[in-house]
Length: 233
Image 1 (tube, rainbow, N blue to C red):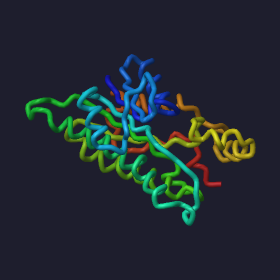
Image 2: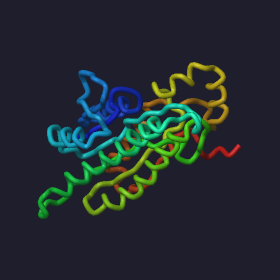
Image 3: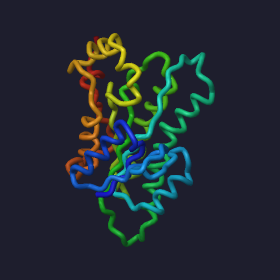
């Protein structure tokens, strides 16, 4: 299986690449960061997506990990900051799905479709809103909705589409909070399993959703959050 992983330079994306390679698959890491083991991809650019699919494809799987998050109250958030979250977190995911669908749909009519899978990275914040992150919450809520709609359109061309909603995971995006003992204590008290998650745990979920073992799963979001969204107290 050949899988394109966006945001592959760090965090969950990097962990997904490692997990796939460990399982004998070919992971193509793509990122806007210049790194020797990554191909260049600006997820907000149609042309960049087309270049990657035309020069490196075809792919059996796609994991949309690229994402950003800043913190600002709505009254202090600039239009540019809000729009940037939409561009990277939701439009970038949509562009990847569209490119995968287009390449599948352009196959000759007589071609039988081999199974393919897309995994999008959402967030627990798709269902649990937090202050000073309305722009992030909105973008990740949209990822969940997009995943459902894309699953319906992907089914006739043999593409399953699912999402993962991570909770608090130890990545560069959460590094600022996880160096603060008070923040860590709050998180651990909120999460039923009592600890922050690791990128490798998210990678295991992604690997499963990409596999034949998940062949009857599409249009769903897996909340890999240590029970956070189940905790109503």
